[in-house]
Amino acid sequence: MNCPGCSRALRQVSYEGILIDTCDGCGGEWLDAGEILKINKARETVFAENEKSKVEGAQKVVLKQVAKNQKSLSCPRCKVPLQTLNYMYDTGVMIDKCSKCSGIWMDNNELEAIQIVVEEWEKRDPEIRARFSPILKKIQCQTSVSMEQDAGTGAKGFLKRAMVYNMF
Image (cartoon, rainbow, N blue to C red):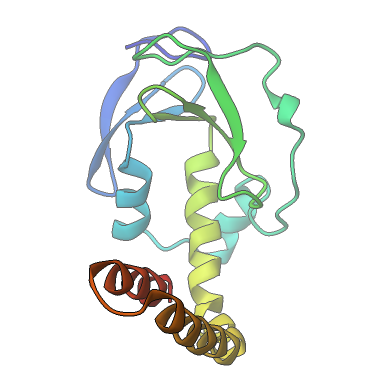
């Protein structure tokens, strides 16, 4: 497989215990479908504050312009054009994703930036849960009462209630 950015051959490396493809030329990284989730879950490396400041946009997440790539990139597996997306919608880390195989291309340091964002989210998780838990419980109760009234009994009713409970 060749790099979608600079066309050099990609080589496999172990990152957080997951085999990914990296480019020695531009520092970009290719992750097959689902590998980013495995990396975020495994996260063997915890970044120190000085390491965080080295990663572009890690301490102050600012939306980059979507036009960061001056040329369009193609999937190294499928050869279809990659779509530029903001990772998790609002992180400011712009990644390139294949619509066919769901692989992800990340420019140099973007994988580290994603890991830092996830670390920061997890640090704030207890605060966020404490803040929104009462509201979510209230919505869950209201929704479940409404669903029980609407759903009645039987298999359809059970499935509707199960969907609501799984949302929270």
